[in-house]
Image (cartoon, rainbow, N blue to C red; front, top):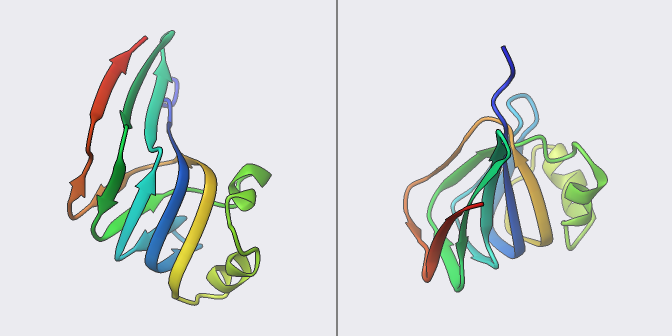
Length: 124
């Protein structure tokens, strides 16, 4: 049996508050965030389902199961490279800024609430 296709979270920029990384569960969490240029997509069986926003997305308490350090693209998203080390050491960052974000959602993305203006859903 083939593993389910992962989702990919892309964004131009994410500004998160009170961010924390749990390396044991590969979970990145934050209390709130704004996301510019958000797209969440999944490709399976030759079709890509995509949810995107034409505005600034705001989310509440969010958890993303993602292997953040899986590839250099993820590390390159961190505006301040020191933040990677602080997160790995178990610190909670009052403010985390990511740009040109590309995270694989390995298991789940949960949020207490999301405001997604100008949301579009497409199947190609």
